[in-house]
Image (cartoon, rainbow, N blue to C red; front, side, top):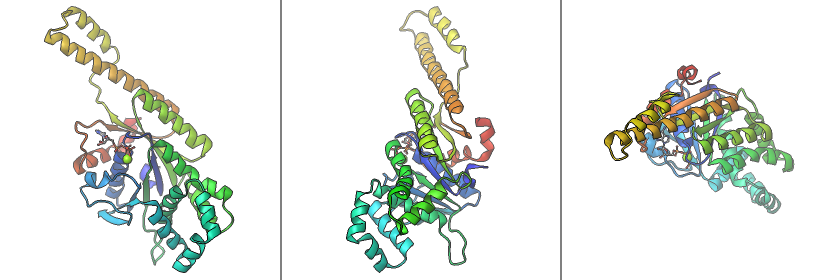
Length: 315
Ligand SMILES: Nc1ncnc2c1ncn2[C@@H]1O[C@H](COP(=O)(O)OP(=O)(O)OP(=O)(O)O)[C@@H](O)[C@H]1O
Ligand SMILES: [Mg+2]
């Protein structure tokens, strides 16, 4: 089954590894196949509008591109809107959410903000129009950087375990049923093929599978350097360095640059190997682009690497 055939994807990873980039690329890949996508940010700095070259994201769902809706979920707006979506009637919403006991309970619940956003996102994932047709084929949640990303994923289970019976608990149960279903939902890990990020990704994988017991949809290794050297080339470079011992010559500078690059590539190869061995699921690799200012053209280019076609190559 391909990544974009899921209903709901959480894109998680350490800060700055490329979660937003991967989420945008994935949205484009899915939209290209005709899927209707909702890309949801969690109260995050909006890099998406710059990348997609569309107006800034807001807490309201808006259409950005054909087949792609976007939203930057903001907890209190999400809670009210989500409360309304679930409870339909504002008076009922007020009665439940503004009730002294309930709101006392809610404010004592860890991760209420997270739940507001998650609840809203899962609600959209299951939302149907007047004819009973689901509004989105795929909801992508670009989770906050690791710690918070995991907090977010922990919330439905906490609510299922501690909330008194009622609409909140029913919703959390519905969400948990979706999130723990490997056919419909998955956690997409994003990593960099460098030492620390690799370790952190393997730890994150461990928490998601053992503690949260959520299905892994796969792994995106981002910003992969094109290989200029092969295993063994470092010996050649070493020999060359000895042949040009004078450190100030241009030849020696070029050799030094080559050695630095070859060693980066070696680390990368080793990390990719560890990631593939440690994570059970499909792997996609996104190339490191020459610019950091990624716009629509770059996002489209990256999205091509996320289609099923490249998967066999990437493994
Ligand atoms: N494949 C790539 N090639 C080149 N630059 C990239 C690539 N992927 C991401 N970047 C750049 O790296 C930076 C971080 O990417 P991004 O914002 O997607 O990470 P993030 O995991 O969402 O970060 P945060 O944890 O802050 O939300 C951005 O400046 C982005 O343009
Ligand atoms: Mg981000």
